[in-house]
Length: 102
Image 1 (cartoon, rainbow, N blue to C red):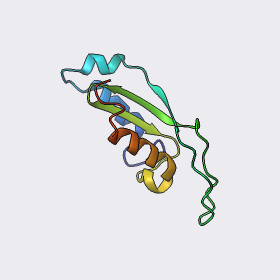
Image 2: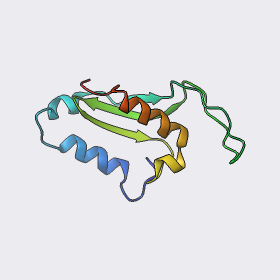
Image 3: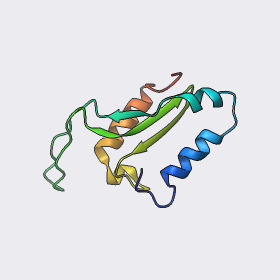
Image 4: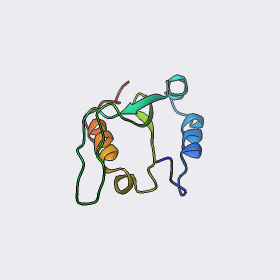
């Protein structure tokens, strides 16, 4: 997440773009796309979370081949704790292969 003080997103983006590998040039040229929710998440009541509407921007994603960089807004080192809806969304999409071979 972009609020992570242990593994900051700026440094992580820099090393992912500097990494030498067969798909490096394709990854460097790949766009940094908005990461938006495709599912609406209702308010939870228990912890007072307000819920999130489908179409809400939750971060950014850049992908080429089997290599993906993702930034989740307002997520710290434990993204699922800080942004559970965003975390569930991107994890499900990642497992579903959305960014594989792109």
